Image (cartoon, rainbow, N blue to C red; front, side, top):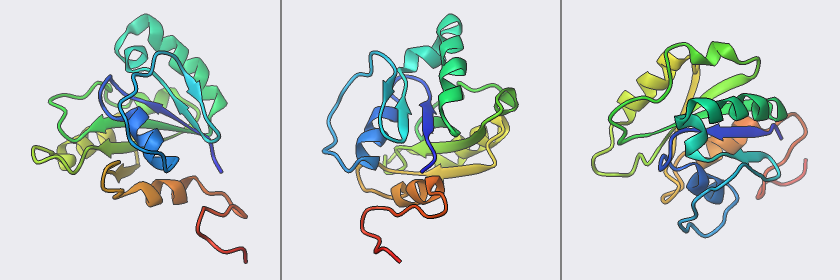
Length: 152
């Protein structure tokens, strides 16, 4: 599997997405520092929101194969500058979270991610499970199997 680093502002759903992708019970957990899991690097939102801490994200992105920029579907603005994906030598994907919220506007969030340079964008809900398998399938490499798949 490809390793992904998740980046986005506080409260956008990075840690909740990690719990859902790992098939864990969803519970609130504030990320205080960069956490490494098997195929996921979870980062605190403050790193993306603070200029000096953002440098750490650039360094940690070298430990991943894919950079995942996250915007929640209820976000009133984009944290990511236009064309910011061009600043990395990693594949950059967009992830729109919290699409199940009644006030969600996933199309607006996707447009912001595409403006940032994401060619591939996923829409997910950690609570309903919508879109989770698409991300896991995207991270698969040739020869990988995902839980529930039979060996061929």
